[in-house]
Length: 177
Image 1: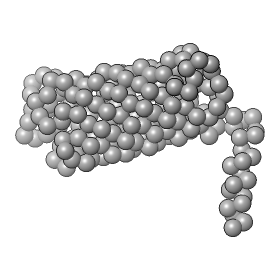
Image 2 (image 1 turned 45 degrees about the vertical axis):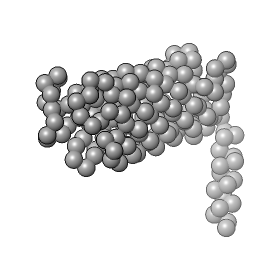
Image 3 (image 1 turned 90 degrees about the vertical axis):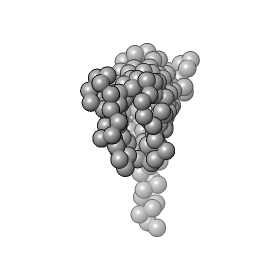
């Protein structure tokens, strides 16, 4: 019980220190993030690992992401370029630890399956995709935080079962500039 009181006290007192105050991402910042989660595609449940880079200028953010999905009989690799906006800061840049990014963009998906392949780029099934997502973030300090990502992908140039996928991830974000 005493340990719980210490944890609650720490969580209440930690934001009062200036080094732990979050900085609004809206000025100019560069961040990297990584997360892991689940992917629902090809009517199967698989795993998803995500790595990304975010560049924020004023109120807009540009995302570059790489996803690796693993399904029971195949795997998919996705690279995306997206643009998003923090919905909490539509009018003013506020100094709060919460962020809610909505984003959309384009990318390319490579499905690695031993049975189905084409000759578009490399051996496998290659597709273009449209991505829409939402990414809530909570910053613990000025440069470190936790993020979640829910993303929907609609594939184009489809030759196989991966017409669309839905990904849900949980991970960490690190502000590097």
